Image (cartoon, rainbow, N blue to C red; front, side):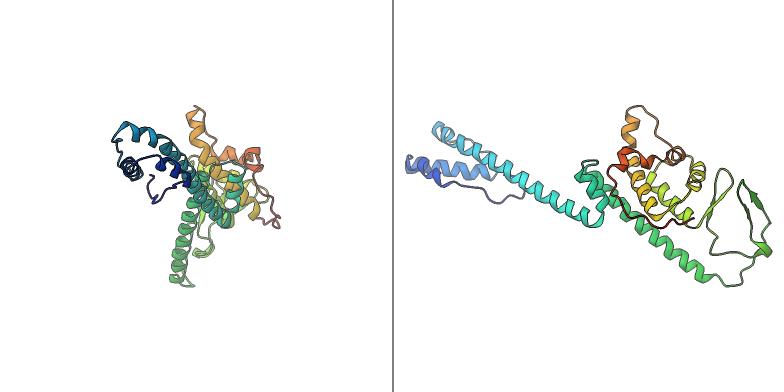
Amino acid sequence: MAEGKKSFLMYVDYINIFKKLTDDEAGKLAKHLWSYVNDENPEAPDRLTEIIFEPIKLQLKRDLKVWEISKETKSNNGRIGNLKRWNKDLYEMVIKESISLEEAEKIAVERKLSLSDNNNRHATNNVAKIAVTDNVTVTVTDTVIKNNNNIISSPKNGEVDVKNSDFFITRKKRKLLGKRLETFNTFWEKFDYKKGKAEAADAWLDIPELTFSLCDRIFLAAEIEARRRPEIELLGKTPKMAQGWITARRWEDEIYSKTEKQKKPYKPAKW
């Protein structure tokens, strides 16, 4: 019997076997049967019991296989139903067999943990902002960073802009901030290949119109890329770094796009 299984099937036509046995023989067969289904690994007390019990044992094994398949199916249906409710994009990929159910569940867990971390960071930032007065002043050395399209200067007159204090300087000395920075950090975490961050930030800035719907598509493709990376390395190939992946618009590759559910696009937001 399998772990957690507390019953088994007895078929009414077994009566034809028991009717042909003496009471002593029927008793031995019954005791052997109950010992077997309770995993006591019994040995038949005699040759007759062994011969008669063999077809019963084979039927018990067939029934057990059916029970195990039914149990697994019910479990998988519950897991798939949960995935469909909370991560419909991953659910559709499992249905289309682009990724396994186990892979989808792992991505879903990582998403949940990532969301929790982001909420904690936002709460910490809000507390920090409350603690800052309206008239904070510090001495800041004036610095100007130039690039081909814009000039970003440090705050004037020593004033600190608390709202825009979070930023990242790219390889080309450009400043990544606001929604661009927030979405880039999410991508970087999901892509999970911690090399060439400054170069990747430049590539992220160069995406012409970054919308919420496009970000969702990129994030999902990045998760899949991270999941497939070990297979690429096992084949002796070099994984794609984030900069090249973004520049090549790899999220549009068939391996990602064919499973992507088409969504109504948001109005482009220029970040």
